Amino acid sequence: MAERRGLICGYMITLVRGSARAELVSVAVDPAARGSGAASALLERTLQRLRRRQVARFHLVVRVGNRAALAFYNKFGFRRIRRVPGYYGAGRDGIAMSRFVA
Image (cartoon, rainbow, N blue to C red):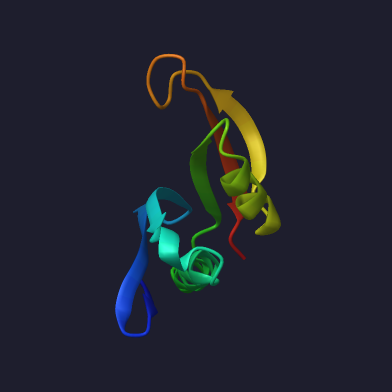
């Protein structure tokens, strides 16, 4: 959860699968808070928590056309793994991405 002036402006939900792997399930930042570093703070804090739990890899899927999200995750060391046809419904593919946590 990210806060700005005492108000919640975003969240990140992560699922830890066993001891070696985690998956980003959902993330959102209030449009009014975009560009403020809220998403970066959420991701950095999530990575800290995954390190403490000794999770080795962190996976996510992002919509193919979401250039801002792709650039954001690339900045944090995520690399494209594969295209996931129909992940977001008929004709709406996703890009699976992953990075080492440590």
